[in-house]
Image (tube, rainbow, N blue to C red; front, top):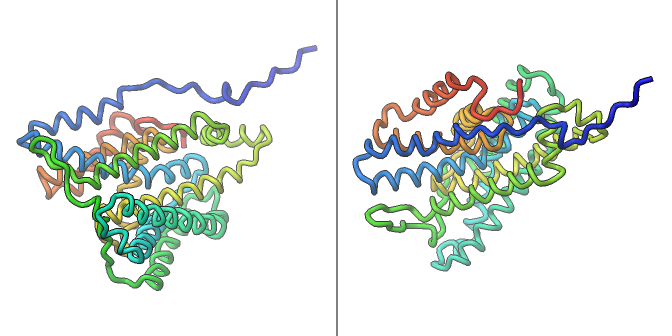
Length: 340
């Protein structure tokens, strides 16, 4: 009579993390390749910081999207509506605190930005919960219907936003302490872009810690690899689905605030306009991978700024070309964690 099989601990059930550091070289290689083309070191420094800041904001927005796809297998083309919602909420909150945003005090500026960020994340998370229950839930496992219904949800969401805030573009000026630039030698780096880089790094560090150092992160990673295994261990994977979707929506709301301030203006189409970039990022990074999403966002941000300066006419296509080159090298992206 054979002895019963010994249960395998959850952590050991996960595939070993592949220590593949070659893709990490892409960011410095791309930056160094652009150095001789920009003409001067100061221009290169300015463009590089601008690219990193853009990449960090895109990462914040796209990180939730890649987790939603990896864990839930949901193609959410309506993700942009949470970006738009966050950006418009920022116009309302910051507009009502003009005395704080126009103050030269950094603390008063932060005292205005923080409520805007919290409001954007909270409302986007709540709307995300309703969005998942009403729109996503009926079409789990039906990719074609997911594409159609989430695109429809995006259109409906934009129209509802127009009802509340109107169809016109609205200004979203930077708080006074974030305006202007810091001078490093002959290079000028905008203060807000430095702040965006810091926020992006903090969000990445927080996500990395949650995913690698907590039980919830372990279950999410396990769910991305094998949902059936997690369910067989007695965990309610549907609750993880909902939690990840809410978190992804809240991050999109945060990204909407940062993106609106980056653009210094908001339109009802601001979310749909950035949707293409988001899917390019998660395809480059590998579906379901936060680390890959981070790397892909930096590459996209740098490529957009370098080509926008060197060859503006091809800037729109440069990131598509980047995606094609990455997929030729690695058809599943830089750090894929799902096989779908």
